[in-house]
Image 1: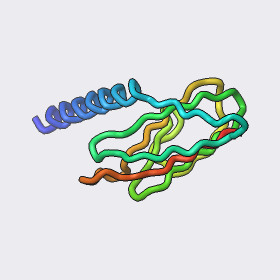
Image 2 (image 1 turned 90 degrees about the vertical axis):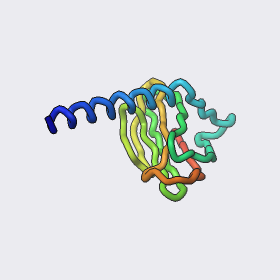
Image 3 (image 1 turned 120 degrees about the vertical axis):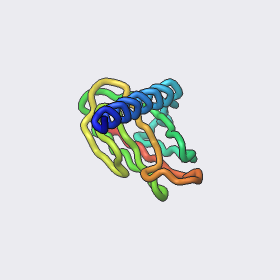
Length: 119
């Protein structure tokens, strides 16, 4: 009986996270670099019950440096890493989705600054 409840709870949690992730992915904002620049800064506010989605398109073999500042903030890069405040990786030729959210859910909106540099 307890095992069944745990299984049902786990399944419901996973399905709800997939729904949230899908909703975020549909509303991804593309980060664009100004001509001649290799980095961009995005400032925003994340509500307590959701996240924001950004995307970048890269060539193969580039180095991406991504960092977020703000109290209680993190980002995840789909298929690369989760729950980071700073991360560096070598890119593939593809579009990466970056989800910005609160690390520990609070009752208030949280401001952030996301810095993305690609060289």
